[in-house]
Image (cartoon, rainbow, N blue to C red; front, side, top):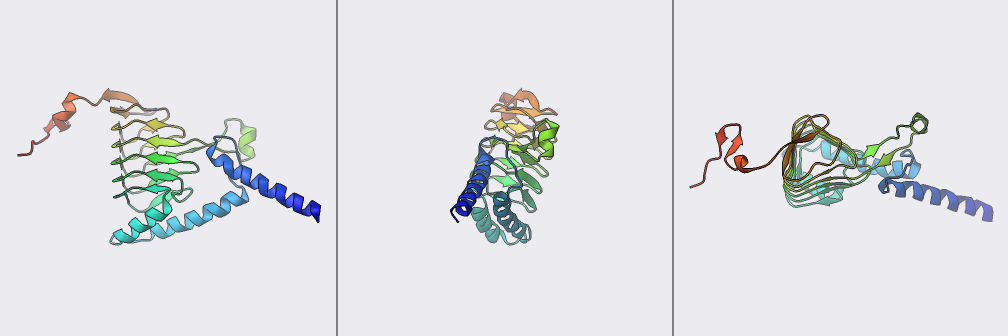
Length: 217
């Protein structure tokens, strides 16, 4: 009997250690039973969110407060929204707007600052797999957090890879693949995403090509 309890304790400890590795950047096995059991609960709730009607804005807002790790005032996420952990590891500041088909591979934490706007079909991934084929055959994974700053604009179809930080006020062009950190106050585009230019004086006059910002009376 003592040996049976000892084995149970060892199994429980092993499962706990595997779950802890979600947020350490270490290699772990995402198919661990304890991880998958918890994950399924969050995914079921996300499925319920995606079945809500656009007219049910108050219901959606209440659900997001429950589903997300942090949900600031005025957060709005268009359905459908996809997330490995149902948004449980997503931290959204206030007044974040998300267009259709955001995919958050939120196996570890994703941080999005106040007033940031995210276009349709954007992917934010925290999960990666080792390059070594033998490790992939064993289904190993690692996770690195993603940080997106305040008042950013992430263009349609952009892909943001694990471990990336994007600075405040920065614009990421549509279709960009962000593989490395991008500083604040710039426009960055391309695959791989690179800084195109700084946000500067011209942007105070023109909002789109040669279209001038109209001064308020």
